[in-house]
Image (cartoon, rainbow, N blue to C red; front, side, top):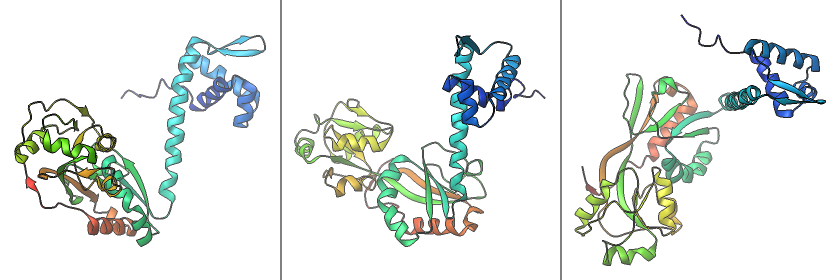
Length: 300
């Protein structure tokens, strides 16, 4: 079997090289890494021998990267920083009460964050660690204790329930309400990744419009809500996730039908995660506060 790492240089030498390249000095690199200057020189020579080409050239009393050295520095600096940050993130797993939660940004901003203070008041020992993202991943392949996603439980050891059924209602600043009512064919629309819902809403509202493609487009509902709050159009969004904007009167919900889609957000965990008291406590708290769905007009 081919070893994919056989071409990698010694990692210790790579650390010494990155420090010397970043600081422009072998002696400063040695001081930062708490080794001797000769140790840094030895590491650089070993690295150059491994790669078969020079990485530095002497310029007077100083050093300068060769083209190959510049290329390697750009790559190694990025890679080592990623490793450093990854190791730093591991500290969270040693904190008592840590529960790692994977959650879409719109759900985090519109639902979880407004309730975080209440959660901490009820269960101060729980330390939620939020990873925001939309991508589907099997829980067994991740560090997540609880995941909010659009796919139901797929595997035998996954446990889940519907957390939120997606509803859609027109949301805008008060100044656009009259235009939506009096001239619905001219009001600017804001779209997300479900643009056909606008056509369905107009049909249920019995209002006329020819052009449904024009307007701003966002993949993240959070930015669509922000654009609507800036008066840039009407967004057909989820009122449950818009509550922070509605509560502060930055947005209002326009009159008309509220559509219930056949799309859901599921809350999923693994059976063995629930054996941990902190995960179980957060899971039960989320179950008690799950918004689920409300009365509305169902659409396919």
